[in-house]
Each structure stands twice: as structure tokens, then as C-alpha cells.
Length: 99
Length: 255
Image (tube, rainbow over all chains, first blue to last red; front, side):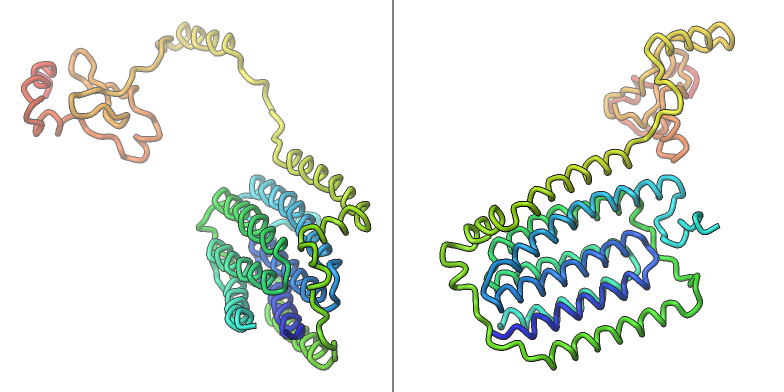
């Protein structure tokens, strides 16, 4: 079983996630795209673990999952706070620091 | 490898759909498909522990959290299509596609060599192999993770916490307020009347009848009246065969 197809899939998913982060305006969808990018990198980690024959890559993917879970909790709390104060989850509306 | 060639196009399609679809809920559901397929990929890649964790943590916890917040924020909130920076969408798309082409070309042009495979690393089982690494070489990172998790929990608590602007009224305060209302405006200090109870209807959308046959407005929630879901008492009295005479008697000459 070759590793390259997995890496290509991982790269494609990462790029799609990056495009989504840049294009979308809804903060929650932007967040989901970030999750997609994290998952794509996880796939590369696990594929390389199999390629190199050790489990370090799987450990790295495991840590990425832990950090992603913590990040989701804090990020969604921030989105909820922003939504509570300005009744919108659009990333364009939270621009007060600019002025 | 069959699993890969079946799931990989599906994953890419779902990821593209996730970016393209306008409603956030549809995005979340498409992301769920991607994540479950990713779990299958981990199973193919000899990572049974990550397969389970992917399904439990990502599809189970993280995605449910996403859906939960979506429900709180409002399911109908579609994305605005107004571009705040002109040409930003196009530029982002071009840059993303260029990035994808660059990195895919880089991967396909490089020679990685034959895969070693995890048979030797997994000889005591995937789980004991991972645990051996986690509690020896990566034990410091593992401990730091606990600090991260505590910080995340505290941060979420602080963010979700709302400061009280006025002190919470105690039972004594509400009683005093009622008596004040009674002395100044003549409002009844007693509890509000309960909604009407009839032989066929004892739901909260039917107003109670006063002893003189009038409908008690206070017995119906203000919210239900503004929504227009209050049931009228009159059809009950006109069409209800078994209770008809009885209610009419109670009603008196008012109907």
C-alpha cells in the first residue's frame, strides 16, 4: 500500500479547508474549516507513521486531536459571546478594534 | 486500498460541499461525513485507536458541540454574500487552488520509498505501543496537555459566564413589591388564575371562565396571546355535545 495517495488526499483536504477559511463569512463555518485542516494534517501524520514504521506519527495525531478539542471549546465560547453582544456570527461584524 | 479509492472522492466532494453550501447546518453534516470517512482511513492505516478516537471525539463530541452552538445561534442564519473586500473571494480561491497544485505536485514528484508498515511497531497491539510511547518519550507533552485542558475548561467557563447587573430579587423583595403594587395600583396580590379546565380541555391555551361567565384574560400566558394560539371558549360551548348544556348553564345569560 503506497503512502502517496493518502498524502495527496490530505493536501487536497487541507487546501479546501484553507479556501473555506478565507472565503466564508460565518464564524462557525470558518471554524469547521479549521477543523478540516487539522484533520487533514492528522491524516498525513498517520500515513507517515505507517510509512516510517513507528507510532510517533499516531501520537502526534492524538495530541492534535486533544488540542483541537480544547480549541473548539474556547472558540465556540468566543463565538457565543460575540453572538450575544451583536446578534450575528459573521466575522465581518466584529471589526471594532479596527477603528 | 479499495476503501481509500471509494472514500477519497467522497471526502473531497463533501469537503467542497462544506465550503460551498450556504447553510451552516448542511456544512456541519457534510463535515460529519468527512470525519467518519477519515476514521475509516485511520482503520486502513493500522491505527485502530485513532479510528475509535476520531469517531468518539470528533464525530461524537466536537461535531455535536458545533451543532449545539448552531442551534443556539440560529439555524436559519445563512451566510451573507456581500464582499467586504473587493475581489477577496476570487483571490482566495485562486491562492487556495495554487497552493493545492503546488503541494500535490511536490508530493507526487518526490520519492518516498517503500512503506515499512506498522506490523513490528504494533506487535504488542496498537494500544500498548501508543501507551508505551505516551508515558515514556512524550510524558512531558502529555502532562502539559492536562494544563491545556484545564485552561480550556476555565476559559470556556469565564466566557460563558454573565455578570449580574442587578442583585437577584429575594422572595421577601417580590412579596414587598406585590404589596406595593396593591397599595398603589390596586393589583391583586394573590397568584394569577389558572387556565381553564373543562371536561375535554385542560390545556394551558384555554382561558378560565370567571363566575359571571366572562373570560379571564389573566389566566392565559401573554406569550400565547401574542402568538395567537389561545383557544376560544365559545366553540367548546356551541359544538361540544356532552358538555354543552352544562357549560351553558354555568355560562348563564352571557353567551
